[in-house]
Amino acid sequence: MPKPLTLTDPETGHKVDLPVLEPTYGTPVIDITGVPRELGFFTHDPGFMSTSACRSNVTFIDGDEGILLYRGYPIEQLAEKSSFLEVCYLLIHGELPTTSEWEAFQNDIRSRTMVHEGLRTIITGYRRGSHPMAMMVGLVGALSGFYHDALDVNDPVHRMRCIRQLVAKMPTIAADTHKWGAGQPFMHPDNAYGFVENFMRMMFGVPAEPYEADPVAARALELMMILHADHEQNASTSTVRLCGSSGTNPFAAIAAGIATLWGPAHGGANEAVIRMLSGIGSRGDIPRFIDRVKDRESGVRLMGFGHRVYKSYDPRASIIRDACHELLSNLEGTEREQPMFESALELERIARSDDYFIERNLYPNVDFYSGIILSALGFPLNMFTVIFAVARTVGWITQWNEMIGDAEDFRIGRPRQLYLGHARRDYVPTGERS
Image 1 (cartoon, rainbow, N blue to C red):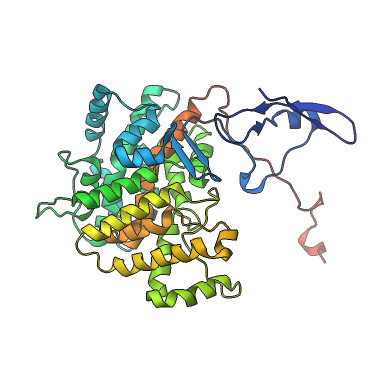
Image 2 (cartoon, rainbow, N blue to C red):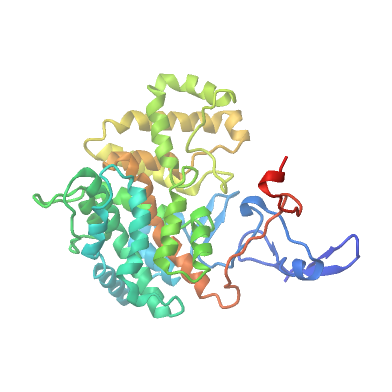
């Protein structure tokens, strides 16, 4: 255990020892909980970029080295060898399943894929042009009204039931938002299909015809979902934890996470990449585009490069780049995406060899190629963030469950503030104001 740090009040000379907490990996953490009590100060940390708000055993990121671990397993191994549903089990339970555990888990998820028909009645109240994320926020929050018999967050059995309900129903809800906007009939789940294949069938199938997902397409989508399943304490995950800290039900907490993900600075990045690549034009127009990116007065940004955490190559980006190449090489009907992919490769080549981008750590992130994959798979642009939400739900609910079960640290979130407003002043009646 590292020696504690000592903080001294320069006016009074009073001292407080601050324990230093040693993580499995990463930067040691100073426990400042004694500072307000002993010295009467709070810390100021906009964006919470220097603050550890929780203990967690779920996900670890090393942004400098480009490392991402789910429960200790490297993302590269899980992407190559696992499935999305098995990754769900790993995140939820902390270990990979045995044969019997895996069979039971799959059966349980299959038994929960249908949604209450009343939820579909709610969907029909939205106008056809509603953004799918607007519907997702309302529909997921509404689940608490349909599955209200297991909402005791202090009961581990209730919590697990809600966790599995969410994992199982999110693809169905997401597909329903697309079908409503497209003016097509809703598709019920068919549990003869795999988890990802079932999702694709509900998205793109119609009752009048059989549907079979292309294996290359299904694997590309599954890979996307694995890579997006969790990403430590990002904005939406922190929102789920903060919302859940009040004791609210998990459906409401996940709805709050979806609302946060909807923001263009978080879940909308892959949409911005597609708009950027579509706007560049041909590959020959890239040098002129790069010049505009370098010109601060132009307002043009290179989307899909750089990351708040990763200061080297995003480990997910190289995985998804290869998947994108395989998808476009083997899937019919992707001619429209080929020029975008070629432009993306050229942009990546320039950014990784140009000192301007290297000095600013502007490496491709996972969003740079994920939008091309989703476009090639046939997902409309307004569904991109919805797919992100379907994949990230398991991470959100796992983090929520970990927080609720943490007897040592669990308490309602209550950030402090640095007040810079008016000093106390007295009310003046309307007629006496100058």
